[in-house]
Amino acid sequence: AQSVTQPDIHITVSEGASLELRCNYSYGATPYLFWYVQSPGQGLQLLLKYFSGDTLVQGIKGFEAEFKRSQSSFNLRKPSVHWSDAAEYFCAVKGNEKLTFGTGTRLTIIP
Amino acid sequence: NAGVMQNPRHLVRRRGQEARLRCSPMKGHSHVYWYRQLPEEGLKFMVYLQKENIIDESGMPKERFSAEFPKEGPSILRIQQVVRGDSAAYFCASSPVSDRDAEAFFGQGTRLTVV
Image 1 (cartoon, each protein chain N blue to C red):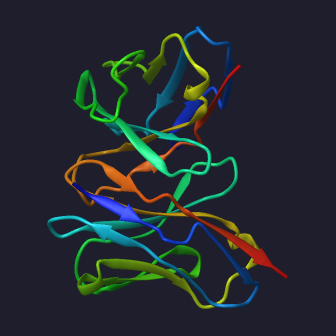
Image 2: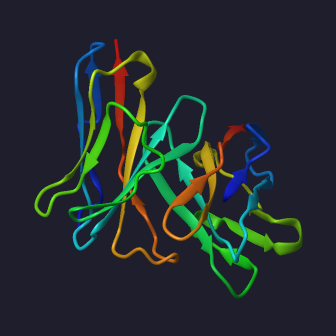
């Protein structure tokens, strides 16, 4: 069975600081991995995805993520956060057909 | 090309009533997924449908919940005799194909409140 763990429920960072959100997955074969962002009261928007190839993937809004097979991780990073990045972030793994999500990390930005 | 449309955005039902949630996928998309998000939790898979077929309903509660995706019209998630525990945000996603690398596009959700 596939599963995703996001160990950090809530993270607070200062505007302009760097960010790393952790994601660990469990899947028996090559994982297809995704990061989504959800603003309050909104649906989910895809930030980036990894299927194969270069293990460092670039996404929208200046985000990137690195796939590390040895650690079963797919951490999301951003060098300098903006106040508009405050949102809920979800990591997901896709098996044959459906996405399995982590419980999310809520990001708060302080001035 | 409009995105995935869900309606209503907000739905209030009394205990025992029925709730019908509608999802119109993006144009050209024939695969629909329903997810439920409880407060302070992630999204839980409920059901995966193609036109006129239920492919995977492993996440659907055994009773009171049903889903359909007819040949014409939106996909419908139906909850009969709602209870307080059904209060949640219900999200629909669609994709053009079922390939693993196909992106799923999400609607803005329907927030169901049972009073």
